[in-house]
Length: 209
Image (tube, rainbow, N blue to C red; front, side, top):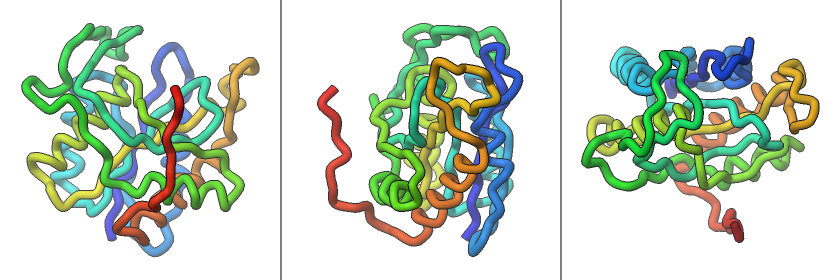
């Protein structure tokens, strides 16, 4: 089983990105792993991701991003066809109310067992929750673009997106954080849960707001 796991380069004035820090620490056991750092740029990130999928023919693709302010590892459930950037990306692009894919569907759902992944993380005492929004910045752009690839080109591919919190080293003392070794362990658990399960748990992960 070959897994492609990606993180992002730093953005927004940060010196590091906890997604890439966590990704590059994963040591595979029982699966083959390819890792890559994506540019935090609209358009370019998807071009790099597409080339990685073509080059490595993975069975599973999990992209990882930073969600500053979140207190838990959050597998994402749904990607929307919308770029609406509050800040510019690393190339200075700031799309407003633009589709990720012109003419694409409004949304795609991941085909990863996100509820089972959250359950496995909870059993390992790692804070986790299913998320129903990946935002409207480059993370959602990559997530939607990835699922569009699944829908149109790589239909056997299992794919999704995971957000991780800030790390303590980033210095956001007023916001939640998670150390890199724990985030790395979480990603390995998500991979192994995905490989082990073809269906998700039948349990609620809904929210009231």
